[in-house]
Amino acid sequence: MKKIALLTLIALCSAPVLAQQGGFLDPNATPAQTQTSPQGGFSGPSATLTTVDKVKSMSDDTWVMLQGNIEQRVGDDTYTFRDATGTLTVEIDRKRWNGQTITPKDKVQLEGKVDKDWNNVEVDVKNIKKLP
Image (tube, rainbow, N blue to C red):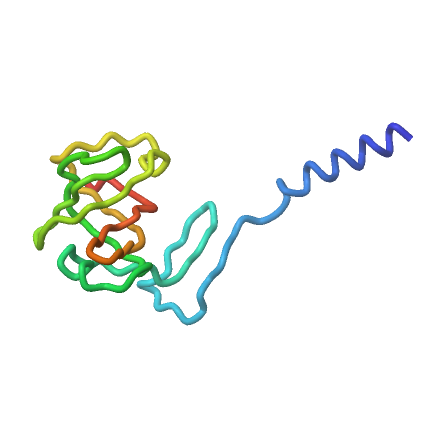
């Protein structure tokens, strides 16, 4: 009985190892929109690159991508971001830094959602990447 239980446990634990990695592949996406990843995940259209000026007129919860510099920290998770068109407040949770150290001189790419209140627009950053 113990051998059967042990074999069952080994079979259950090894099943995820044998599974193929993958994710969603959008059949309607153009080749330029598809991104392959050895670890799997979503493959399809993503946020398009935009500017601070345009973000200010976008609707709440719109997914955006920005490139520029983080100028300074203004609160616990709040920073000032600048690109060629202006400045914007961005919220970056500690877990989003992924061990990266970024200075105001570093150009970064931010991906996140527009968070619009009555008289305030900011971006809630979900991904940050240091650009070369």
